[in-house]
Amino acid sequence: MILAADYPFLEVFWTMLIFFGFVIWLWILFAVLGDILRRHDASGWIKVLWIVFVVVLPFLGVFVYLIAEHGGMTERSIEREQAAQKQSDEYVRSVAQSGPAEQIAQAKQLLDSGTITQAEFDRVKEQALAG
Image 1: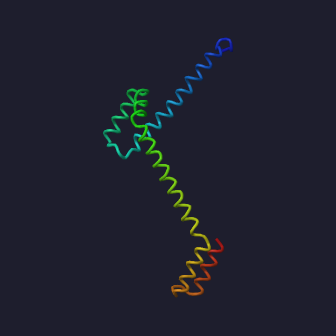
Image 2 (image 1 turned 45 degrees about the vertical axis):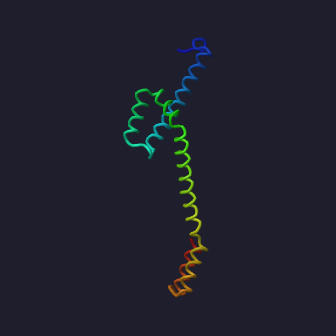
Image 3 (image 1 turned 90 degrees about the vertical axis):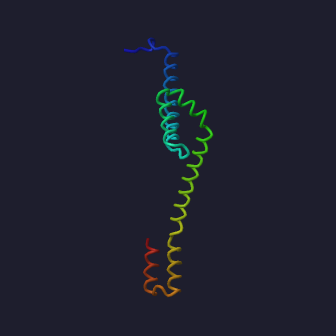
C-alpha cells in the first residue's frame, strides 16, 4: 500500500515530468514517421534508412530528423493543409451551386432552347422546390 509519506511530492513531480516528456516524444515520433512516409521527394530507400535510424536510435534519430528536415516538414505540412482547404472549398462550391434556383435556371435555359417541354420544366421545378 502506497501512502503519501512513502511517495514525496518531488518524486510525484519527477514522475509526472518523465511521463509527459515521454508523451511529447511519442507525439514527435509519430509526426516524424508520418512525414517520412508521406514524402514524395524521397525514394523508398531514403525512407527506409530514416525509419531504420529512428527505430535503432529512437531519441537521436527523431532529433536528427527534426534538425535536418525541419524546413521540409513545414513546407509539406503547409502544402497538405492548402490542398485540404482547396478540396473543402471546391466541395462547398459544388454543393452550393446545385441549389433549387440553379436547377430551375438550368431547366429554364433548356425550355427556352426547346430541349425540354413545358411539362418537363414544371416537373423539374417541382422537384427542385420540394427537395
